[in-house]
Length: 101
Image 1 (cartoon, rainbow, N blue to C red):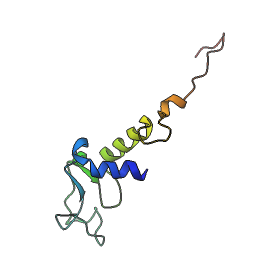
Image 2: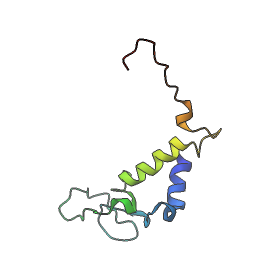
Image 3: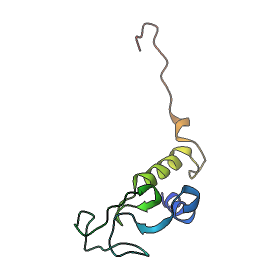
Image 4: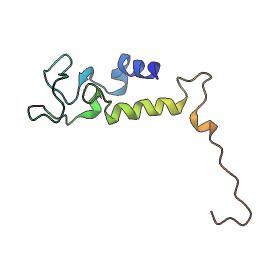
C-alpha cells in the first residue's frame, strides 16, 4: 500500500492531481491548507468543490478520487509481487444443469 500511495504523490500530475500535499477541505492556505485544531465542519473553513484535484480531503482522509486511483492500482496488480491482477484470482462457479441463475 505504501508504494501505491507514494506513487500517487510522486506522480500526481499523471493522475490529474494538482496539489498533492495540500488538503482539499482545510484552513491556512498553502502549502498544506491544514490546521489540526480545526475540522472540516468548522464554519470558517472553505469546503472544497474540486476534490478530484486533491489527494487528501482533510489532512487525514483521502478524497474519493484518490481512493479510486489506489483501488484501481490494487486491482490491477501493478504493485503486487508477483504481478497478478486481482480479477485473475476470481473463479466463477459453473452453472448447475437445472440452475435458474
